[in-house]
Length: 161
Image (cartoon, rainbow, N blue to C red; front, side):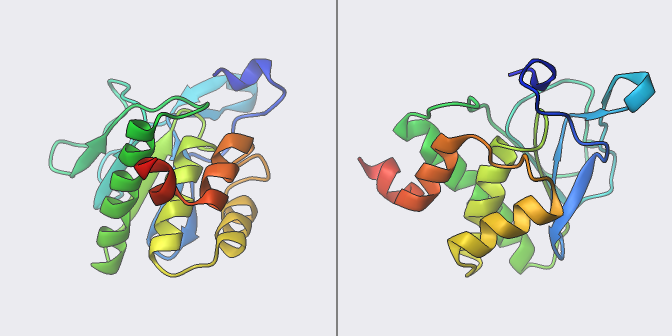
């Protein structure tokens, strides 16, 4: 989904810290007068979780990089399982005091779904997780109503259906 055509602006910052050590971002950011700019990760994080694969966006070869592709729309039970797996990687890294970046194209929906599920795994309540994401990353985060519905229902339940 290209947010330039939906009225949802890309964030100006490449990523934002949601809780200590857990960051949410995108592969692109709004460079204002420069237009849409790529976000390239080097070694700022200990672990990177990417919900899409885009060559040239990093991280460096020594950084663990978990990559998958799920759409920014309705998900199959297999895709929901992938989200749960990615959130598990992120939660385990946070528990180990590592710095984790979860990212997708714009850093709002797919990364928001994984970050929200990570927060749930870390003991946060759903409303608190969504509020944290929207207050720390963007009010546009998790604007995909399907993803909020999935979180409300419970990803593990959807995966097992």
